[in-house]
Image 1 (cartoon, rainbow, N blue to C red):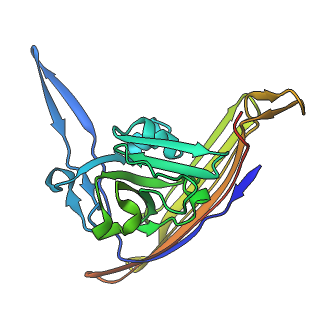
Image 2 (cartoon, rainbow, N blue to C red; image 1 turned 60 degrees about the vertical axis):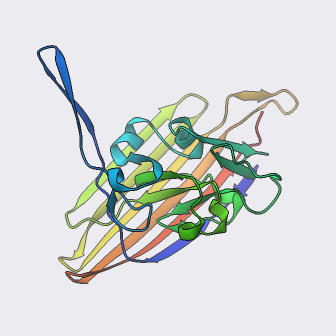
Image 3 (cartoon, one colour; image 1 turned 180 degrees about the vertical axis):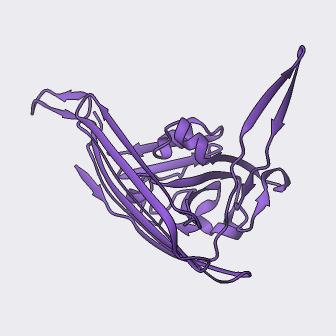
Amino acid sequence: MLTSKPFILGLGAVSVAVGGLLATEAWSQEEDVLLEEIVVSARKTEESLADVPLSITAFNAEFIEKAAIDDLNDVADFTPGLTFNALFGEFLPVPVIRGFAPTDVLQTENNAGVFVDGIFISGQEGLNFSQLDIERIEVIKGPQSALYGRSTFSGAVNIVTKKPTDEFEGKVEMTVGDGSRRAVKASVSGPLIPGKLAGRIAAGFDEWDGSYSNQLSETDIGGYGYFTANGSLRFTPSDSTEITAMVYWSDDEIDAPA
């Protein structure tokens, strides 16, 4: 069983996104499709997706929940031009955008970089960490080295976590299934000092024994165990200044593939 423990801490300005929903309304025999504005931060500033001269696939929080997107395998399933393979039981995960695969998967860098709130995930074994409390996922296709560094020759995947809110909110999810599948995710957010300081904390546990039988040891393989937590503070000393500190921790135990 392989274990990875990526640890990420970010400090800086916050980019807030508003998700877009697709709505349809029928009038007699015609359909008018209304598309709300989607704001992305792919170029490290808030912009409408329609105004960004880049090829971007973006998922908002509502779509992520409905499509049950939990990791990069799920992101690749819904993103044209993106494939993802996790070799040797997640030890060598390789995201590939537009077919630009690394010539040697054993090298330390891929051609597509993965970021959490703009912070680069450098350890390969930590790329496909368990995703928790995600606001938006942006897949930017094409060379992005000018903004994101040399590990983004073919593109970048930017995962944006949910930020502290000015009003209290909380959520709990529970999942139970076969193969000893059990999962619990919870989050809470709200003001600590009204108008000045807000906080958010989330934690998740997801475990599954797997569905493949190992005839030698008579145990199931292909399972996993994810233990994830994140927390953030948003400080707004004035109307023009906003500072956010964030920590994201994931301890993932993943069986070797069948």
